[in-house]
Length: 439
Image (tube, rainbow, N blue to C red; front, top):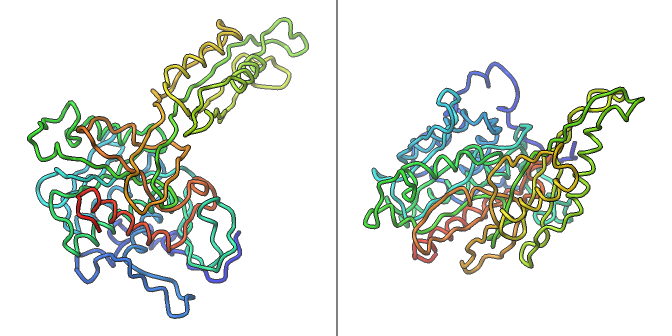
């Protein structure tokens, strides 16, 4: 447990008959109706002495999202909440089944007015990695936003919880940014749409589904032509934790399963069997020592053996062993790197070692970063950017969001309130820049 001076734990994270009876719309009562006086802004009440918990529509929305367990595959409740919330703000909302309808997994696409066409698309994902843990707001010395280490600065309000950074901070900040721009009459129907997808943390099936659907004006299933309003989707702003800097790009990715087929026997007579574990270990060692492509921008390609399984008992020569491996690719093409994996494995034992590539993979992704006033960085993680296909000539793609990936997916995922608030202004600036309206 972390030491804290003041702690506010969201009561909705506690198991009780009361929370069990709450529906998604109950989680966000301050925003249930689009009252202009409740339009989200950057104005947060931090309490007179900074020891009273801050509150604002932005923080309420963020808390409500974190309170909902939306681990990949279980996003149904979060989708229902966002659908209800966005409709209460007078957005037109279309939901889109991802996988079998009975699973209840849906993307959420929201826009102003009657036409789904937009010039700018703000998008992020609502699913999270496991395990889920609840919301907590504390007043303490925060994690350093840039390196994940404990900072030396003054105490401030800090939010933790699964998805607090990746990527519910982006979802809350994007919605709040649009509401702020609406309130100031800087955007109107046809300018901006919102897309919140499921499945980003695993296969990207949410964005892949959207990409292939008529809602994507550049999909083969769309009837869009160059004269259609939706053809002019010129900018897409993806939300992921970038410590509130614009990402200039991210590494490519592919993954594979490596299976070794042995022959079981008594461990006292190894000559009668073939040890699948030994075979697998030899192949993995050769892969670790393989020099994959590198680049000045993205550095070295890295290989992670994330899962190992083999054998049934210590006195039985294992008949089967398996490893699951992810490769973060620093230089194109992905096809060349995949072929290097095949060749390396075949040099060990082509008959008893089998490689199965579990995802198509993609090359490193270069991103736009031409907006004045933003610091930049490159990132090593994967995103939904390559899963959204098509676009008109010159389409811009930006990647921006609050919080650090270095604390996302861990047991201390969190970010400072100030950075969540700052991201709202960042998204506003990106939208206005994309619309050619300055700030």
